[in-house]
Image 1 (cartoon, rainbow, N blue to C red):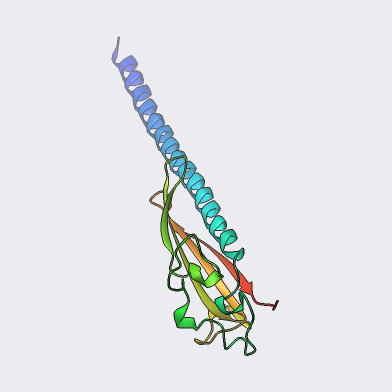
Image 2 (image 1 turned 30 degrees about the vertical axis):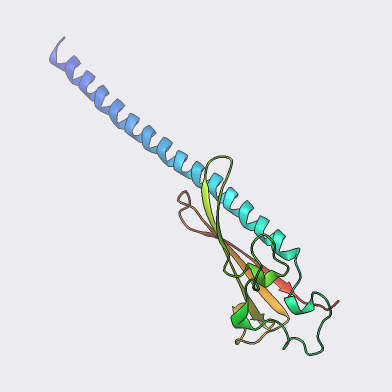
Length: 165
């Protein structure tokens, strides 16, 4: 082999090395995006499941049997939202019992998730913000799901309203 052929072979090897590094980088990035997508789908499913479970419950403890005459003032005070004494998940009877819940779940694929829920009264004129510490006819449930496989948390919201019996 002469010097010209040797230089061509070295150039071809350098080009092959650069190409292989680029292909490897693309495959790794695609794999990470794929895991993120599958994880996001699982997180959304878990959040939606908890929301569906919560909306199957009553709006507030005081209206489960006979609604009081002074609504919304008789609803559970904003500072007391959460399970009543003696209640524990999954035996909740109203939406605000889900306030402060934090649990972990592992999917069939072996991915671990942490699910947290917050419930607060909201102002009907501004459902994105909390009410001024007074009960209203609307509660917002926020379910946040986190996982080591997600680049950021997934949060879903549900606005529940009381319309009477």
